[in-house]
Structures are given as C-alpha cells and as structure tokens.
Length: 179
Image (cartoon, rainbow, N blue to C red; front, side, top):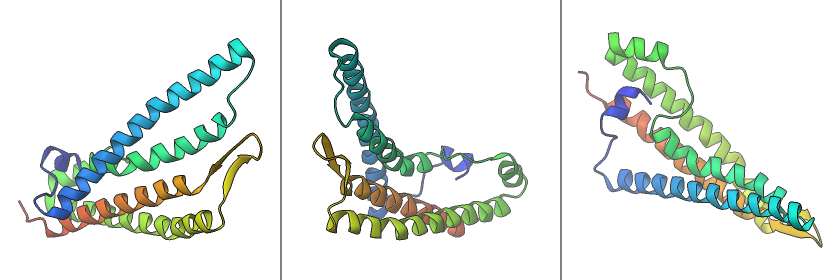
C-alpha cells in the first residue's frame, strides 16, 4: 500500500469494508492487550524464579505461542496502515511521475500479497483441523499442557483478514480512476 493511500481515505462505505476495518482494529487491540498480559506473565515468572526459586510451568511455551499469536493478530492492521516492511523508494518515484503506473504496481503488489496469504491460509486450515480433531497439545504432560488449536485459530483468522485486506486494496487500485 502506498504512502499516498495512507493519506487518503481507505476504500470505505460498504458494509464489507466497515466490517473488515472493524475486525482489523479489534484484532490489533487484542494483540496489544496480549503483549501487556505477556509482559505481566514474564515478570511474574522472573520474580518467582528469583525470590522463590520456583518458576511457573509453561511460561516458555506460552511465550512461544504468544509471539505467533500477536504477529497474526496485528498483521492485517499493520498492512492496512501501510506499516508492512517494504522498500517504497522506487514505488514512490514511479507513483509521483506516473500515477497510473504506480497504481498498477500497487495493485500487483497487493494481489501478490493476497495470493501469498491465500497460500498460507490454504496450509494453515489443515493444521487447525488436525490440532482440533487429534487434540494436539504442547509442553510436558504432568507439568503443563496447552492445546494447539487456539493458536491455529488465530493464525487462520490473521491470514484470512490479511488476505481480504490485500484483495480489497488490489481491487481498489485496479478500479481507481486516473488523476
């Protein structure tokens, strides 16, 4: 997504766009809250190790899962706000000189982003199914166990909304009128 579009309004108006934007904002907020809870959990574990010589079981596994969950919760909103890492130098140069070509480049970039997340989603859904049906768990039995399916749900939802956002932006750039 170009810097120019960030300054303009995102495509809006339709119920789909409003729902997608609301979903992206809620998921980003949940990701931020998850970071806060994660900090408290890590601090509590560190204090427990220091003062009582007894760690909380499962904190390491929950931190591993949390990092994955936070990334997928915030990915769609980061993409919407134009904070996805990429080099904009050449893109901005072309867009400033030839807005039509820049718009087509943006459409191709967003279409490729949608294709990528569709492929990731295609692979993530069977993982979610397996984790749910076969009751996969992580950690050591007897000390701490956590089911894998909740993080798989977050991955699938994160991929789905990011795919939908990339698709929406690709369509927006294709249909954008010349200036």
